[in-house]
Image 1: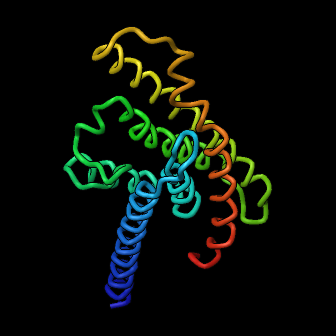
Image 2: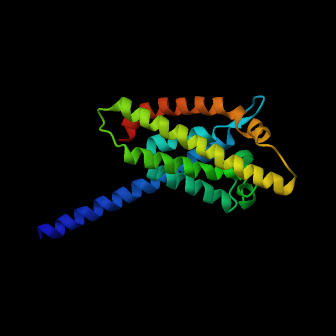
Image 3: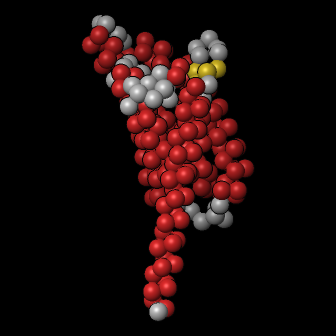
Length: 198
């Protein structure tokens, strides 16, 4: 009788955790979508897409973050207007800038790997923050690298030869400072919201 009750309680706990995971993943995908629609008008316009990716990873963790980003990408792939400029469809992912969107998955994988390999206790906040910063910076660099290689391949296939420095000046250099600022803002928000989620 006691074993049956224990098994029932365990099943309820698992179902509750699964429901929470699905809810968090859906909220994460929705946040990335909304932030993709917000465009900041500057000399080189940019969205809050990377801010949402950073925030989702910091708040939900690597595993849920990966699922949120994957859900976002799949929604866009099937045609939902979740990408920048309310665009959607596989054509966006297969286009010149699609590599940067797919690169978010690499950012999330690196974040998950880094935070899993270097787990810290809640009392070591500074060490945890340092690991998270390094993981996000490294993940962002990999995203830049993958997206740039993708851009160059598509551009040269469809248009003609283009130099690496030229592509970096178009697609990476103007976004480095804004992305770092968005990362800092994501850390501030995550620091405030984490206790509420827990």
